[in-house]
Length: 234
Image (cartoon, rainbow, N blue to C red; front, side, top):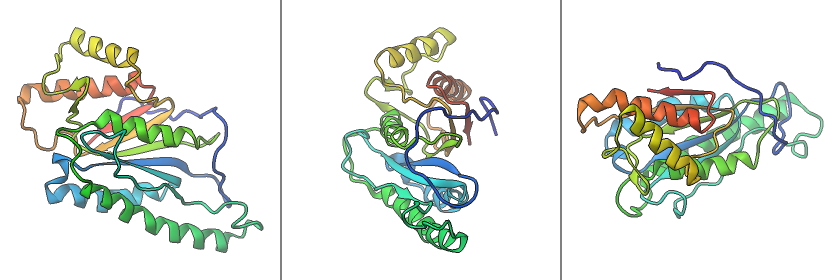
């Protein structure tokens, strides 16, 4: 496991959804890559095996798909409000709260798996577009005193728009220049205070193996520049 940082910060931006019961869990989101990453059965197995455990620590879950045009994609799944609201459980009954929570937890994995079957929307993979779309959903629901976490099921081979990692200059200066270009163009997602975990990073490894560690460094630096407090590339 490779970590950019190990500190979880408190998010200080206003409230959105509110859960009943004991300590609030995290506000969460998941991204599923429907492009070449989706072809091996291993990718679907990863989501089925790893997403439920991730979701267990969440009170809310948003979704985004990586397609060739992720931000404008028609392939969408509505968020799941996992925690019972005050209206649903006015007496803060733990039995009622757990029953509602269990039911909604069961909705998360089927929604995520559907994103593997998105129709092709142009060639290539727009990973940062999916991150921007997901973060916009999550930032509209930000919760004080709660962690904000994203699980990304993708190889991170972004090759659409202003970022083609297969052609990227991965020298120190080249990485810094590209990240600054993306920042200036407002193409980096706002990951301030977020924890990010990526499953399937460079899974196919079809490019020059000498570039693998440099691509990892690029993404860690890009997540850091976007404000993420931690990033795991698995």
